[in-house]
Figure 1: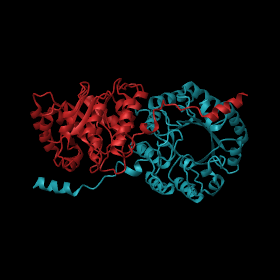
Figure 2: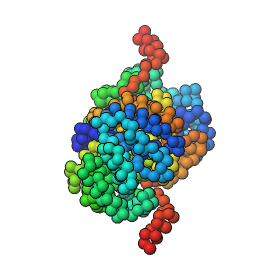
Figure 3: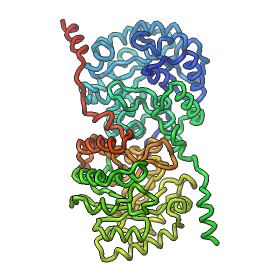
Figure 4: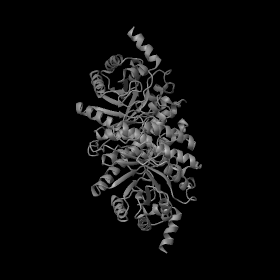
Length: 319
Length: 319
C-alpha cells in the first residue's frame, strides 16, 4: 500500500481564508498579517491568504487588500487568494499575488446555491478571467467543489469530475483542486478518482482539499497518497466549519497532517514545532477550542517521565 | 491499495468497559444492562461488557457480576470481560461468559505502571489463568498493550511484539489483540507490524484496538485492512479517554468505523441506524458530548432539501 507514496509532499495552508471566513468575530487585520507572516516561515508550499469576495458576503475578509499589501513575502511560498468573479480578479491583479483560486461546484445545484450561477456560467467566467490575466505572471488554480459528493444531489460520478477538469483546462487554468466540500469522501472513492485523474493527466498539478466532517480527512489523504497525489490543503488547528454539518469539524488540521506525514517518514518540509506555536496562538485569537488533536495530545514521540511509583516498584522487585 | 481488503470485517464493541471505566459519574447498573442488550441486537461480533477488577481501582465497573447476570444473551455475539488477574478469572468463570481478555503491556515500564507487575510476572499469571480455565468453554484473548508505542519508553520494536505474541500463544491463549493504548500508531507502522504478524501466524485471530488520540484511528484501520486484518475494537460515540493525553479523544468511534466500512462496501453486518440511536442515548447517559462525528454530521448519504433560493434562481434562469 505504501510503495507508491510520493517522496515529497506539499502542504498548502488555508486557515486565514477557509478558517477565518466562517468565524463570527472579526479577526483584526494586524493579527491576520502577523499570522500569515509567521506561517510563511514554516515551509508551507502555498498560503491561501484571503478571498476577494464582497465584504457583505464575508465580513471577516473585508480587509483583503490591507492584508495582502502588508505581508512580508517569502519567495519560497506561493501566495494565493480566492476569487469568485471578474471583479475579484481585478482586485487580485492590482496586488501582485502569485495565484488566484477559482471555484465552481461540479454539482449544478450546489453551484447555484453557493455561486448563484450555473456551471456553464461559471466556466464562461473562468474564460473571461483567464483572458484578464493573460500576459501577467498570475497562475490560475481551479477548485472543483463537491467533487466527492454534494449535500443536495448526493455523490457525483467520476465522469462528471473528469469532464469539468477538461473544461477547466480548456479555459486556461493551470492547476486544479479536488475539494470534498462537505466531507463526503471515503478512501476507496478518493483512490479511484485520483487514479483516474492521474491516468488521464499524468503531469497535472492536483491538490486534494479534504474536510474532516465525518472523521475521514486523514484516511482520505492516505488514499490519495497511495494513488500518487502529493499536494494537500489544510487549515491550522483544523479551523473552518461547514454550514451543512453543524457541530462537525471543518478542514483537515495542518499540524495533524504534518505530524502524520513526518512520522511516516514522508518529507513535507514543514516545521511542526513552529506550526504548533502558531496553533496555540490561533486558539487565543479565535477564542474557542480548535478541533486539531496534536495540539492537545502532543507528538507521539513526546515521552513522559517514568512515574515515581514505577521506580519504587522496580527497586522493591530487585531487592 | 484496496485489493487485499477482507470482504468481511468484524467489529467489537468496548464502550461499557473501556468507555465507562473512565467516566467520573457512576452509570446505573440498569442503564448498562439496557445498553448492552440493545447493542447485542446490532450485529456486533463481540461486546466487552465489563471488567472484573477491584471496585476500588475502577468504581464505575463495581457492578460487573450484576450486569453480566442480568443480560439477555444473543448467541450470535461473543460476550467478553476484561480480567486483570486470577481472582478476576474466578469471577468470570462463575458467570458463564464466552471469553476473557487478559492484558499485558509489551513495554516493561508501562506494565509496571498499569499492572504493577513485570512482563514475566504477567506471563506467569497468564499460564495460571490458562490452567484455571482448562476444561471450560472459556476462550482466552490476550491484549498486547502499548504494541505501537509506550508513553514512557517510546516506540517498541516489531521483534518485541512478535516475541510476546509467541509467549502468549505458549501460555495457551487463543487469540490476540494489538492495542495502541495511547494513540501512538501511524499507518505505515501498522501495516508493517500487521504484515509481519500475518506472515508468521496466517490463521491467528487478531484484533486491532486503536485510539484516535492523534487523529489517526481510522487511518490506522485502513492500513490494517490493507495488511489483511479484519477485526477491530471500537467504542460507541468514541467514548473512552486516555490518562496520558488529557483533552484528546479515546477509542475509535464505532459508528464512525461502521460508516466508513459501509460506504467502502465492506460488509461488517452492523446496523448503523441502530448504533446511532444508541449513541444519542449514550450522550444523554454520560451527560457530555461524545467525540464521534457521524452522530453530529449525519451519514454522507443524508442529502438535504434543495434551498428555496436555488429553486427560484433556476426558475428565473429558465424564464
